[in-house]
Length: 249
Image 1 (cartoon, one colour):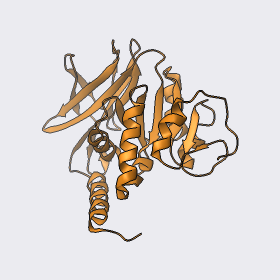
Image 2 (cartoon, rainbow, N blue to C red):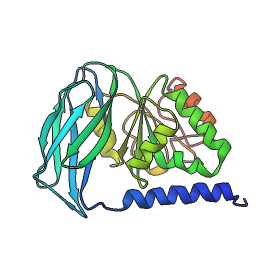
Image 3 (cartoon, one colour):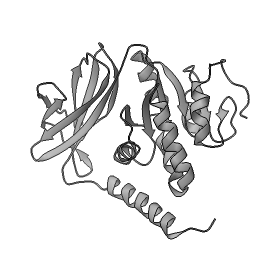
C-alpha cells in the first residue's frame, strides 16, 4: 500500500503524541481513571512526580464532580489515595491540584450488575492509517457503549493518548487505564463488575482466560472469536454466550 501524505501526517501525529506523552515534566501530577459500582466504595489515586522520580509528601486537592474538595497527602512513592462511594451511575470528572500543577481524570460508575467491555487501545489506534476501518471502529465503539461501560487499556501509548481518542470518538461512558495484565481484570472482578468481553491482541485476550468473558481478537488464536474488522465486533459482543469458544475462526 502506497503511503499518502494524509496517512503519513496521521502517523507522524501519533508518533509525536507518544513522544510528548513519554517526556517527563520537571514536576508532575497525575490522576488515574477508575471504574466503580454505584453504592460501593472505590479507591481513587493521585501521583506526584519530579523528573524521573516519585515526589512524596505533597498535598493534593482532589475535587470529584458535585462533591467538596478533599486534601490528600502523597506517600514516599508519590501516590496518594482517597476512598469514595459514588451513589449513582454515570461518569464523574476528577480534578486535582498540587501547587501550580493541575491534572484531571474520570470515574466511570456502573449500575450493579452492569457489564463492562475491556478494549485494548492499541488495537483501536491501528486503524489510524485506514480511514474506512477507523470510521467502522468509531461506529462500533459508539454502538457498544449504548449497552456496556467501556474500559480501554493501553500497553504502550499511554493514558493521555487513550483519553484523546475517547474524546475524538465522542464516547461518554468510557475511561482508560494502563494495562497490568491479569491483575487489571482480577481487580475488576473483585469489585463485582461483570466483564462481558475482552477485545484486543493475544496478550490481552490470553489474560482473560479465567474471567468467563468472551475473548475477541483480529488474529487466529485458540479460544478467541476472530473478527475480520471492527464492523463485526458489536454483533460478536452482543451475541448470547455459548461458553468457551473452540479454535479461533
